[in-house]
Image (cartoon, rainbow, N blue to C red; front, side, top):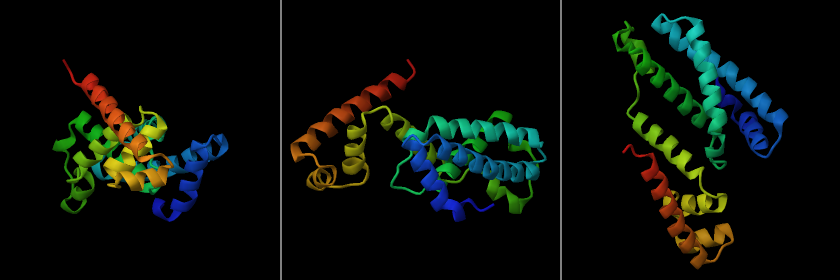
Amino acid sequence: MDIRSEEPQLRAMMLAGLEGDDASYKRLLSRLSAYLRSYFNGQFARMGRSPADAEDLVQETLVALHTRRHTYDRTQLLTPWVHAIARYRLIDFLRRIKSSHLTVQVEEAEDLVAPDDAPAIESRLDLDDLLGQLKPKTRQVIRLVKLNGLSVSEAAEQSGMSESAIKVTVHRGLKALSLLVSERRPS
């Protein structure tokens, strides 16, 4: 199953689900579970792991998608976001079982090794989690100015806020993010 070919339908279900359409959200999770099952079964077959392990990982990934759904950027494609979370879950699983000692064919190793973008994916997920704790308007303004690189005047035009409100919102939002980060640091 090539999940990318279903991007428009899956994205529409996700957006509807985020707007409160429970039926669309259930259909989305059902379709994603089929994709995830196929993805993890394929990965685990290469490693000689059982389908039961794959099923556990399917459930973990669905829970992660559900709990992080508020971090999904509605302006972006859905399938890369889903795939990033699935790969992160697989990498986390491999770390847990310390599978670096598994025998894997050289041509299949690329699928199992964390790519160079793994730290970027983890950082993105952490950032999305932090931004998800901010008020929606603050989150939007920080994304526009700090992540998308818009000027204050462009962000004001796009958000319908005044330039001074943009500046204040960015300042307060960054201060709130700083507090959230400091709360997460171990003592």
